[in-house]
Amino acid sequence: MNKRILEETVMRTLMKLSTLLILSVLVIILITILVKGLPALDLAMITQSPKGGFYLGKEGGILNAIIGSLYLAGGSTLIAVCLGLPIVLYLNIFARPCSRLVRFIRFSLDVLWGIPSIVYGAFGFTLMLFLGLRASLLGGIIAVTFLILPIMCRTMDEVIRMVPRELLHASYALGATRFETAFTVVVRQALPGIMTAVLLSLGRGIGDAASVLFTAGFTDHIPDSLLRPAATLPLVIFFQLSTPFPEVQNRAYASALVLTVIILAICLTSRALTGRYTKHTIK
Amino acid sequence: MTTNPHIRADRLNVYYGREQALKNISIGIPANRITAIIGPSGCGKSTLLKSFNRLLETNEQVTISGSVSVDGENIYGQGVEVTAVRKKMGLLSQRPYPLPMSIYDNVAFGPRLYGIKKKQALDELVERHLKQSSLWQEVHHRLNDPASSLSIGQQQRLCLARGLAVEPEIILGDEPTSALDPASSQRIEQRFLELKNDYTIIIVTHILRQARRLADYIIFLYMGEVIEAGPAREIFEHPKEKMTREYINGTIS
Ligand SMILES: Nc1ncnc2c1ncn2[C@@H]1O[C@H](COP(=O)(O)OP(=O)(O)OP(=O)(O)O)[C@@H](O)[C@H]1O
Ligand SMILES: [Mg+2]
Image 1 (cartoon, helix red, strand yellow):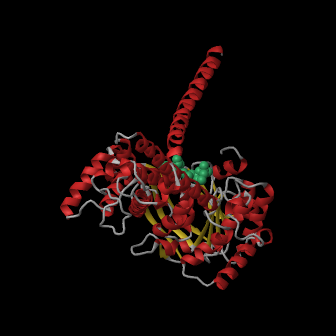
Image 2: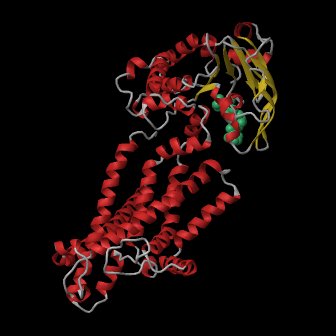
Image 3: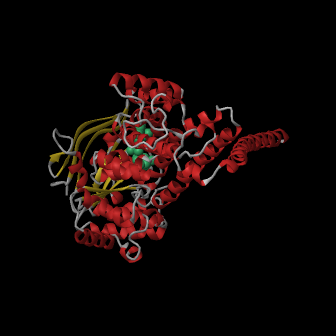
């Protein structure tokens, strides 16, 4: 009896410690960004594009990269949803469950998830050379779509698998086809999970530097066409941090702060939006 | 009563993988009557019920041989639309599964599938079928609330309304009252007694007393075989088979 209680206490303490560890890492990151970045942040930073010599400490801002990142992450997330949702519905509703093909697709997605983003960048770059594209918003969107598609699919897959069979049967019993069931009943039931998948992917897409390094290029201008290069926040941070000037390095933290706030804002709004749809979910 | 059955199963065999769940079932289900399928747990009652609306085949491991005819047409025949078969039948499951949408949309789901789009027509259908399942009184002022906000008993009546809204001929119930409180069960039973004038009703039940209260016709299954089938009074009062007698007296279960 005593041994069991001891075990319980030790385990509980370990769990608390690891939670604390993760939380403190998060808090330390936030504090660093705030302490170093907040003084360097001003209105010009988020309302102007870089003027000449911005990366040497002169005037300007990172509006071009904010917009570039939003376009890039938004575009690739949209494409990834449009490709990913049919894949996942196929796996769960249309295909024979546990068939070899289904297991193979799941396995491939897991492998793809683990591939480092620089490889997607290089692959995207090769693909662009083949298609005759230059470093551009489009190129970046393609590379980031590759990067986030496995994340999107596997996350949605896990929630759609949880939809009770009986719910599907209820819909079939009313004479609905698999297609109708998938796009009305299943999507609605899994909507909160689908939103989570979209958010995870968006967050990953907006924060990744390596995949856009070669593919999206870099520029001081706000992208006005899919075929023009686009600056992105992670690269801005990277370039600013690698200058020798302390004030420019502090701007990197300010840029990181902007990126963090954007991600936070996206999370909060979509949470609020899903709240309105989850009320229909059947438990 | 078996002269012109609404549903007729003929040498129906069902396997889950290698395991045989139904063995050579040949029965007729009379129209506009309540038929109860009774038998101990695991004897194949749900399987038999699901073979009537072809829900069995959503399970990949199932193999089916033999035939089931509805209105004289083999529903397992070639070129038969499975959705058309299912449209003829409303299903109530053991636990209600409302669709993840509002009360109104749940009832309108079927009619919308079949092309009814006009709001007025839908409103009228929703009201009629909610009344038919005696739920209207309780929900008419909150039709846009999520179906999951209803109590379990109300959800089961919503599922009944949802099934009736596709204008079926047959109502299938797989232990439709087993998750409900006595008052809700009684309401469902009451509905069934009224609905049998217009529908053929088939229920699976564990509760012999419920079968006695409702059923006109009884099918007694044991280990995947039909032991005895016939009018309820005969089965309950003068069972021909020894096994039926034992089941009814509670010696086997
Ligand atoms: N999906 C399945 N896969 C494999 N075997 C199954 C499956 N469903 C049912 N069976 C088997 O088929 C037989 C009949 O099952 P069924 O669910 O029809 O019984 P039941 O009479 O409805 O039982 P209960 O009264 O407990 O609901 C059982 O032996 C069961 O183990
Ligand atoms: Mg059953």
